[in-house]
Image 1 (cartoon, helix red, strand yellow):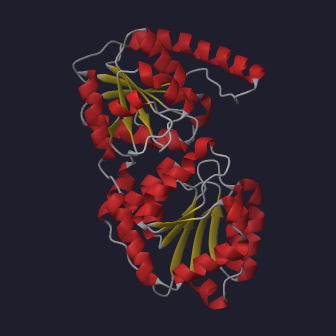
Image 2 (cartoon, helix red, strand yellow):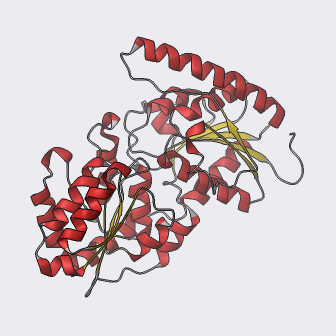
Image 3 (cartoon, helix red, strand yellow):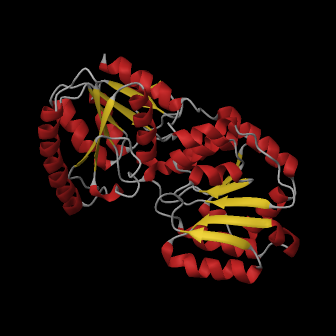
Length: 366
């Protein structure tokens, strides 16, 4: 599929989780709006998440992850990635894209390695405050580097010097929330609980129990919308029902923008997309960074909102049902603080990150 006058072609390599895929989708939307054509290179795990991705075609490439110190796993992953590179080289020869853009994670490796070995223009975007392993491997060899956070930890000095801070692209429906004012809670308190694309066990179990510990006056005000792991749905629903709390629990929210826009408070992990979407939406939050995240990238992401005064950060080792209930009660009792937290989040949000990244794509491809 050679390039045509109808628009230059960008291959966007992303997959694994929504944290990688949603920023890629936002960039793709921006590029399509500028007349580009987009092809998505990914793995097989993201069919549900990529349903709305504006790509004219999807390429499934072989890839795998591994744990450091696991020789057998590393060997198997290496073979899978090499197979993916061979697949990607053939696809890129046929497509002849103007640029290949990667969003980190092991599903991006085959397409980027293939593009680098073919001498093509390449760009990587790092969503987290800590550069991931895949991007660390690729960074010295790609044409250009963009990142979401000014604190690009784990990146060599030469890589940091080349990186352009653009923010984390958010989907158009999230971007639209930047101009939606935050309304302080009155009689009803809208609580949104997210857990990342894979769900979070500590939130699926802990938040319903914490809510049940609130005084009855607070429980009556609550309207909870919670993303809950499938195996904990029944328990969560029973806990909320026994506590007399109006709650909707489901493993996945498709219409996240509407829910985020209506929220008075968000409780969630601190993945890069979550942090940046909360900032763009201008919503106060309680963040519980994933304890086992490599290099504490979620903890470092959360600093953006915490240091701005927009979020309370609670570490897994320190959180309990009682402490979470006490924090939630304090925030529910202090609408002025919620308004201030919302304003602080809004100040650090970058609603134009997708366009900024698209500018870098076009400059790199030129």
